[in-house]
Amino acid sequence: MQLPLFPLKLYLLPGGISTLRIFEPRYVRLVKMAMASNEGFGLCMQTDDNLCHFGSRVVITDFDQMPDGFLGITVRAIDKFVINQHWTEDDGLIMATTSIIPNWTPTEIKYIDRDLSSGLQMLFEEYPEHAAHYPHPDFEDMAWVCQRWLEILPIGTEQKQWFMSRSDHKAALSFLHSVIDEELKR
Image: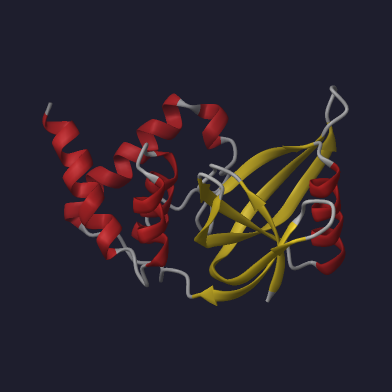
């Protein structure tokens, strides 16, 4: 699949939702391309000036002209991809050929994992502006819960990329237990 890319520090996994402000001409073109193709565009992180290998394909679910004249868009991550090849076009827009990576399979929460789900619920209650992005949160799906935690935790780009490359949520679950269980003990 060929996608226009939007390199950001934003880490979004399938099911993740965020808002973006669009003002550069190349990204206005990206939005137009994404809307015309119904394929969306790629969000990818970068280290220094190098694109990371893994990203998320997002679709635009809403848009609005903001008071400052910029375009505001809401995006939802659909799936993950690996970049096979990328190039920069004349206007600076980065394009890439990508291969889709299977999403994590929805998984029912086990009793031992309830604290991770309830902790995320408490976080959503504490930050209603973030929770507003998720009108139908799935706190009963461990893969969904792990993805939302990974999006908000302050972990390094390399580690986020590693989790994105995994075929299931088990490594993320183990990591989250080590971090959050330790925090709950304090």
